[in-house]
Image (cartoon, rainbow, N blue to C red; front, side, top):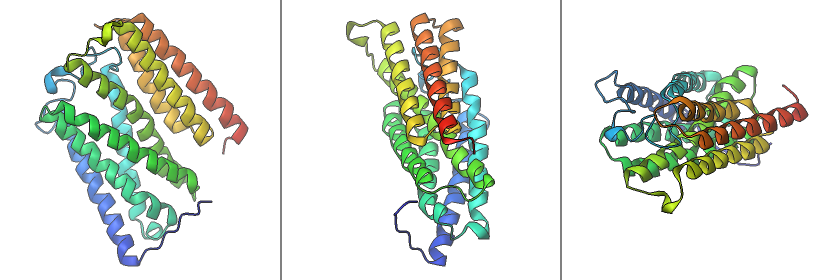
Length: 267
């Protein structure tokens, strides 16, 4: 049980609930803009195609981004869940509400930075998003879910969100470096791609150790790595070393998660 002291008034709890709900709406509207459905340029075509599936060695195949639909659905579910009267004064949501709201607003800010071709600005935004999600995820570990619904809607959503943003951060930084003319310091792109994939796998292993084998972060992180592998095996930009490094990373993260999950129990 966490020792974090949390004291709120009923009015403050209501403000927090509203902030999370409004932030979720802003993020979903931003996602429509980023998809091109609301008049914006699709992310893979914006910023001169810097985030296209063949832009860098560690760019995921475009179908990988369909995971955003699941994440946004989960975030909307969380926004509704924490709005329920029974959750208003819940300790978990007092701890999680503002970090989740911050992540939603940073998500929308990231989309805007890409839409306005501010590629360099997207890096500090996505790094800030990653930091906020680590903060939120650590709070889900400190405060156990109160029910199965809470576990799925709250922990599952934040875990999926974090795992995917780990991959998105890697892809985003690589895209900015390549767009800025980074030549690899004389080292081959295949080497860099493989190294970055293995580092992402190490992050996944460390996450699994920290959370004792929670499935959600592993699923989304490995989903992203798997689509990088697919893109490097069969896409316009082929790199078998990067692809095999992704395969090895996925295997390591999955094996670690299953081992720790088995030890912790499958509740």
